[in-house]
Image 1: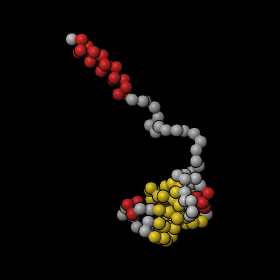
Image 2: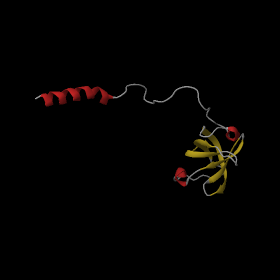
Image 3: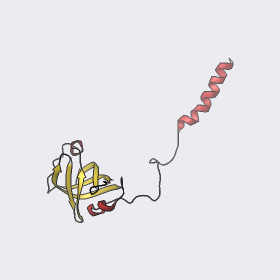
Image 4: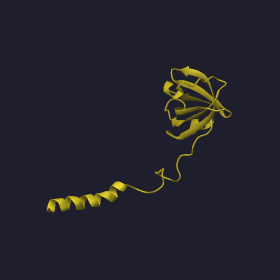
Length: 121
């Protein structure tokens, strides 16, 4: 009988812990940090892993998964894996929104590693 009471007591104490935290839906740090990059020319001097949202055109393929992206501020090399394109057809005339982060290089100019591509109408 003691074991049953001990089991019930431990279960009743565990229930509040299972309920979890009740707060904002999107948790995490809220405060100053790296500023989001929105122009190609800002990539040159940005820190590694700085978030980027770029809107413009992919104007050429440099090699396998590297492309030249251009907006009003200039050009930057972006890395886009085939799976990111999915079934979207993109030409140099197609306006795109690219979401990714800066990949800082030591001996070469910074690039942007793209995580998401959206065609802009």
